[in-house]
Image (cartoon, rainbow, N blue to C red; front, side):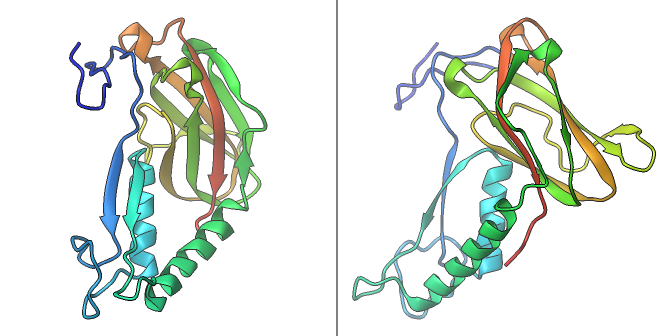
Length: 214
């Protein structure tokens, strides 16, 4: 296996490599997103635009380096600060109110990893984290919802990536109402060539939320 400039081993999926490297992207508040240094005449992203960029990176399981440049006096312009405060308030309002939450980490072979969580209200996003102390194991997964009025289960397809979880991932699943429970199922693992086998997968977090947008 070749190593890139970051000394991370490259491996073709579904084979696992020796190192884990988080996907990373960058963006700037200066619209259209390609200016790195501030000019007084530059347009800038609104709180809604910044929120959408953050969500895009969470959907991709990536970290975001977000550039907020100072002005010529070394201070962050007030108009930038105001937009960031709106984003911060929206994210705090969203993530401080989980409507389903995994009480403690769960580890099992992919074949046996199925997690059911009760839901306490309408939601539109599901957040996942895989415990990476033993490596990234999950190759694919599915999500199901249990309808409160009938008790029947159905597989979610809207917004569900269904592939590896890794460090952090959010599925934006559209408005889910009248749901009693959600179920996460590990479908396949990286250690067994994409098949569900004996590799132990660990989920450290699953939570459902209702977005509060800026």
